[in-house]
Amino acid sequence: MRDKCFLHHVLIVALLTYGSIVGNIPFVCAFGINTGTVDRVSHQRKNGGATTRLRSGTKIGAGVGNVSSSSAGTPDLTLFSPSKINLFLRIIRRRPDGFHDLGSLFQTTAFGDVLEFTAHPPGSSECDTMECDMKGVPLDGSNLVMRALALMRARTGAAEGKYFHVNLIKKVPAQGGLGGGSGNAATAMFGFNELLDRPATNAQMVEWSAELGSDITFFLSRGTAYCTGRGEILRPVPPVATSGTAVCIVKPKIGLSTPAVFKQLNYDELSEVDPEDLLGKFLEEGPGTNVENYVNDLEPPAFRVLPELAELKRELEGSGFDRVLMSGSGSSIFCIGRPDDGDAFYERFERRDDVDVFPTHFINRGEGAGDWFEI
Image (cartoon, rainbow, N blue to C red):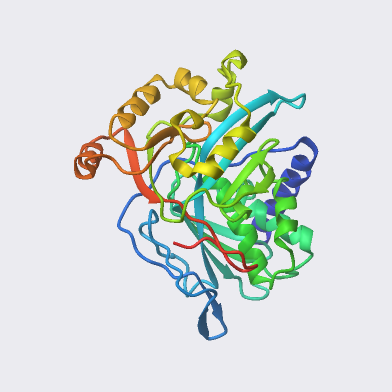
């Protein structure tokens, strides 16, 4: 254990140091998705021999499935880790550092993962550890969850001699444009902060999170935010719709590599609409805003990389949903509202072996310091 923890520590320190020099270095949880029955798990924190709810009315269930811990005993803290969709995504320019400036409206959904935190007994471990039920997810210091814990420990100076085990119950697929790994990292930062009695403010965590990746900052918002820069500059905005607004996420089994999509980007194809104008439309009119305001500059290059994705979008547009758009760099497509014939739609797609379908809804978290995303 000592040698293994030492190697994890060296790797995490190297990644954090290198990341602070060159910018965003994404390490996203890996491939596949495990579907199954949906159980409900309370968002709770263990207090001595008793178990005390951190917040009342917390239910984790929609889009989770097979929620269980392989670790002995009750976790000290269980948190839901949401996914996100991009209601619009404008690429503004390519920057000298190779990244792109963007303007995008992000929204969290109730499709997501679960993180269970358990403190290692004193003296039993010299590093954080993790497990995951999804095959292929790295469990060493390259995982964003492990990097997030290391970052919080380094920045706060808290938890000296105290380490955690995280059980990641993974449902959000990689290469889907849903921010699953980024959401996990933000949830790990929040969980660390809760377990150590909040040594950091939310504003500090937002600032630090940019060292780990572009989208992580968003998941420390209340669930609706306008993001600029690489995505790490956060402007919280009021929810554009009430929690519970229906959205269906359709994810092809084939993923899309973000670098491959950007490689196909034709700057002459970019929309000319001001993203601030798009933001104003969504804030004023909600998700029912005109279809022309659902802009994603990465759709054309993504469709060149994966032509069948364009066919899938056309099929979904003909199914009766209010609005249909690719999320992020793909390959997931989200559909606002409900299909004309829900039974027929889900029966047809359940028979397909090339896509997964996740009916879900918008969620936001409360304003309190200890509030987190709940479903």
